[in-house]
Image 1 (cartoon, rainbow, N blue to C red):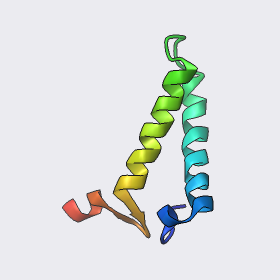
Image 2 (image 1 turned 90 degrees about the horizontal axis):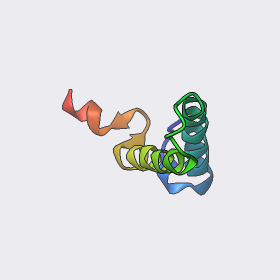
Image 3 (image 1 turned 30 degrees about the vertical axis):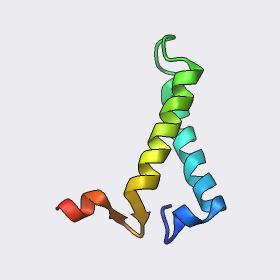
Image 4 (image 1 turned 180 degrees about the vertical axis):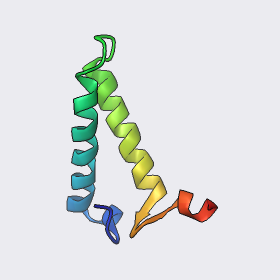
Length: 67
């Protein structure tokens, strides 16, 4: 999913964001009621921001440089 220059292309960024939302959506609805829709949106934003900052694409990430 995270291809070359995915962060530079609006459509690719949108696909990544939707994938994050889809994955977290299924988890969100299995959680207790204290996990509100607002918290879900915040978590989606946090996860997407992490991916945007840490994964360049083509298998490159800050974590692959540590190993």
